[in-house]
Length: 101
Image (cartoon, rainbow, N blue to C red; front, side, top):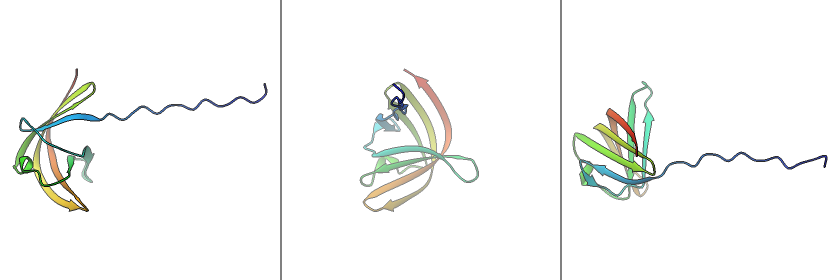
């Protein structure tokens, strides 16, 4: 055979979170992301379907469980905004710990 099919490389699957807790209470979130600001400080963005009163604090401790990781983050409230039908809460990261379970 002169020409073979090229094997495509599989991209690693993105981790999906199983449970998100804010100050020890489970919240319903659509998306959770850790991003960088323009000044290289980390921020947490949480997208919820509706107003989440458990995030209405100046400082919040988060626990994020995925398939094989547990992230413990601390954040101070920065801003909240409406995007279409969703609410986006933004926190500045104050502490970050990552555990493999």
